[in-house]
Image (cartoon, rainbow, N blue to C red; front, side, top):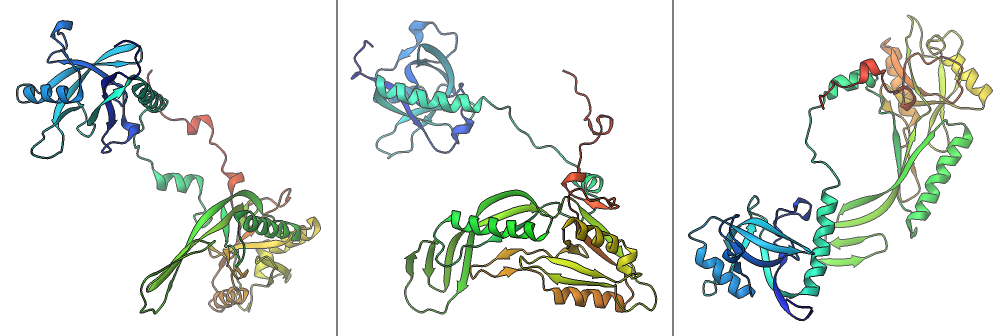
Length: 393
């Protein structure tokens, strides 16, 4: 071939996009492969290989033997190496008057090579790209799906099914809020204010989240398209806005302590008063001595919380979250209505039914956790219980 970089050779210019690059391997014709020739068998002598001089000539030669052979061996040059690849001949999709033939991978019909007459410099660049793709594919073992006993694992490691361990709140950008950092700043200000007030939250993560808003509009006009800083809108019968919000993930306390309030005959209330904090959390602010709440342990918890400078915060009532869930574009915190909580408690006491509360525990709490579900309690099992079946190597 010489050193003339302007000389052209027959090369794999690209691979048809029916196959993902992640599925390529070195047994396939790859972009940048310089085709030196082909033969019908692997054990053919060098002189038996038909030399590939140009794309059109190679196409014509492949067309002549397509009906006689199923597989052929193609000799290609990759960098300093020459390799032989087993391939199949396939007809290019083109006009009926100009039939063209090329090769495809022997083990994958989707991997069809598009040939071209390229310079050595062009081939080298394509080979670098192919080498990068194939090498990245080799860094991992093949993955396969394995069966997992989800119900058994949940029952064993998260026995309190009503606790999800982590919670989150979504902050939507305010009108006029031009950037994600501005929304995130507001988000962290809310979190810091909640912590400062005595709500024992534990930070987990903060991430951006795309929000799609739809609103029906009665319009008889043609479709209008509007570009906005928030996203885009399309006015026909539906208006669509795409916003970038911030979702804050947190643990509701180091542990969520489960308590059951069991009323006695003749009692007219569970014996606790609640209020809502500025950040939208529901907390207990008084306990009647001798009441169902006192018998469940809330009074001693409340006293310890006051001594520690913490609030006694309810995270769930009957398994349902009572924590704030999102902050809208108007700046309103969407949280559980404490009047609805009172109605739930009143209904339960009228029917003399027990009710379950989850309370956020705080660090260094001295009262033992009777029933808890949180990240702190999800410790790895012992080796004897947790190891998998041994596999011979």
